[in-house]
Image (cartoon, rainbow, N blue to C red; front, side, top):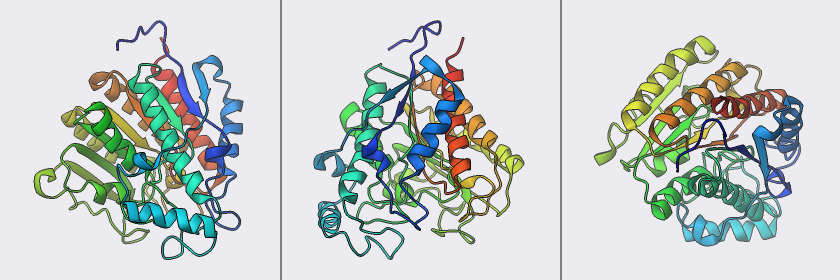
Length: 324
């Protein structure tokens, strides 16, 4: 669907209790306050009619099955009812209701995909999403269901896309997405992250470029602790060149804010400008190859000021990309 640049479509931003409740309570770093902290900052930004708020949706079990195994989905459902223990080695508690909250994260990301594919928008942002550590058969790193992985399968199976780009600037390597599609040539994966020798999950070496027919379709760029915006810009030129070669039909952007300086559990030193610049550049790439189609997901970020500012700058960049 063509878009008249003189009449830009609004950027969709999702908010609501269904996704806000995804979290694990105090003192867990992934608390349920992250949603409201971001939305308060976005309101102060004063973007007006350039954004349109949308309500969360809940994924069906069939949608979860696009990426996850049936046994794992059943396990999460059972643990969610019990409301005790953990879904992994201990990072991801089995709090009461986590199945419904995690299903809403996935469903909301899919709703953003649908809105864009149906021409209702070109850009969308889901703050409590980007749960990139969850594997097909297990939870990991605060992530229960992998909305990015489900979205990639959804775009392929429901819309017939064959060149889907996943771009990740979270401090942590997006291992759930990477290994979920390591041998899949349809998913173009570009991930800039803190070197796994210093940070969870310990993966994402530059030598990990995909396997089998997918060899060369994955780009991992590990950065040393304290890497700042200069290193970000240098690495970002490689991501742009990679995406230009890939010519994607849709871009999924995981923009975790834990890569900003001052995050309590990571060691990178980006500023919010890195997120603003990445979002702006991705919009240009999306405009060149896929009529602007991009969904941003919040990902990590445990310094509340950092996540509020970084995600707000992403939304502003989405808006400004369509401002005449």
